[in-house]
Image (cartoon, rainbow, N blue to C red):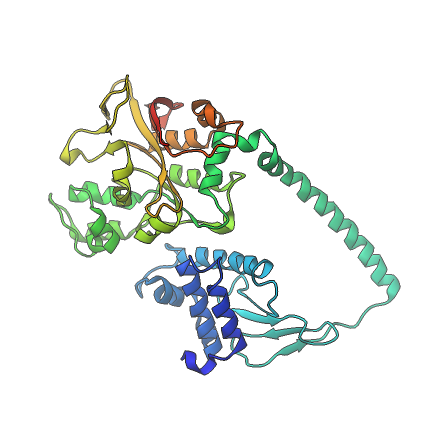
Length: 431
């Protein structure tokens, strides 16, 4: 199909875009743009919809429900932002522009300054010629001047409001003291303009299914989807019900609240960030991206891919032993194990925070986890609280030293499903 428009300037533009620095390391966005552009240039733009893109680009089954799976919508939003970035930087010299209007998945190509007298050149995705949009007749100079004056005043007022709203973020980013705190360094390393950041809430459907089948799901079966196609019950269970539950996309409100809070941090770079369900991760994400994961291995088997790097290892599978946190290299005064009892009358809980290199050594992975939702929430609140992290790591505030990777073991008290303020039990900082 591509051979019919290999020399089409619109297709050549798309090829340059996917080869640019903003796309070359983002295979999904590149595939998305190539697919919708190819379909549109081939005259199939009208058939582009969320379901067809989900099947062709994201390998969803023909019966998947876009209402429960927003992967196409979220990537379309990121693609729009990434295209704007390209034309503002690397592609600023381009005379032809492409965008994907909101509410549509068909790309629109526009030529800049290619038509005289200020007219705009526009190529619809399934057209092969420019359509010139002539400017509307001008009104009288007096009326136009009055309208321009009012418009200018409104613009100035809106600009002032926008500047005032942005002041806290500007202050936070550029104040000489605040910009050198441990917490700012952490989030500046997790959010980078040259790298993707993926926030991953726990897979609560997997936890429910584990209770039904009697065992946890290993990473190979989880990553390949085998556990949903052929569920294995070690106790009496309804296989059809298990498959139904495993096909759902449930997560916890606390994980979603954490994701929202993280995206509102001053250091967050939204057009480089996405929230992705654990089931949709790939191993290459752990090699190429920054990841923020919430929940234990029971709710996210992907944690086993990085557990070898962890010192504070959470053992949360009661079928293979007691619930505990293993301290692999205890320092003086630390225990080798910290036990967790869900029936503890004092309601004591444990949680961990791990800030570690990703598998490719190109970025970082931040993991917040606990034995319960309350524990995970306590860890999330600790790591997003400037005062807690800064008080624990004062040596990295007020200077230009890079924040090293670290792990923290936290103690909490859980009451009615909520955890009190977390207190550090032990922490390790890695050179």
